[in-house]
Length: 490
Image (tube, rainbow, N blue to C red; front, side):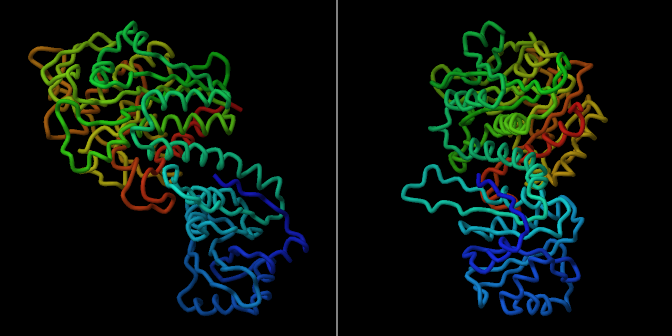
């Protein structure tokens, strides 16, 4: 991740515009007014900036719009990017404009003049988030990314304001890297090792192996991974930045590093996308990293169940009955409905060990949620209105799509089994809801709980405003905002 550098507005710094060989971004308001740096750039470009603004005056300047003057006369710069933002631009608007700059810059050095903005941190956030690329498995030399500098009236204050945004961006990048990794690289063992490395950031990280999981009775989780050569694991990450003894918020993630469907084998077409079936665990890991980097004053525990769902002579079969850590028995009708088997044991363990103030699970759980909500929103299920509203407010503030879905007894009844306490599927109708109902059976009555089905938003085949094609890092920003707004102490 390229770290932006705040620099001050001085005569010497402003003169650098003439020699800068990358891209220069200047900020104008909706009336096309330039600040002191913008006026200097206009003079250096022999009035090209003002002519471009005048050409657009008839249509008005759209907030958040970015347009480019390529190879301006009289300057060394390859382009001038003109950004239309009011001084008090909203977070979403500033982030979107920054993302446009991040995409436009490619590998070039970027120099941003932002004296007009009161809080430029959101602009910086957008630039950095869109600047991501995953090239770990590309051969050949790759040109290094250029620098990002922001000219501002108070570099120290700008740096301090940008720091938490950059911490969250680092968490998003960590999530994206994990989700983008192929399954032959990101095995359960490698995943756990990468999480253990975050101890250097101040997290307490503990890896539970199969013997320990067997002792704890996590037999539904172990059943999912028993057909694979990769050992199943649960990783516990604790961030204790809040008051000592205060109950933590628990985040639980599904980490199926590859999902063939098991004996209920998936179709071959599209199976390569199942490298992203650990997206819930990836998001939990990214949130924990962001909290640690920004030294959040909150207690949060992240737990991820890491398994691989493979067909083999030892794989779980349709018709098998397994016993969960809670003690409930589950009739397996479809081995491709495996994520809920992983989550239910980890969720029960989280409640037993940590007695959290609230619990949120995340999973790329059902294709049904994509049928219902497409790729614009994650499905949100909850047993607590106030808790759910807090999350939805955080998601809206971060412009991460989320839509609440229903729960109810009629859906729960669809999980009745003639030979066990429940089935692991309820049939085709309301598939995402019955999956959530299954999980709710492993939530204590007094436990505020949210289930996030992120199957449609964790990884996309087209770019978004803040991310290129592939892993999005959805949920890292919203969950970090939830913690900041509701769990941090003074």
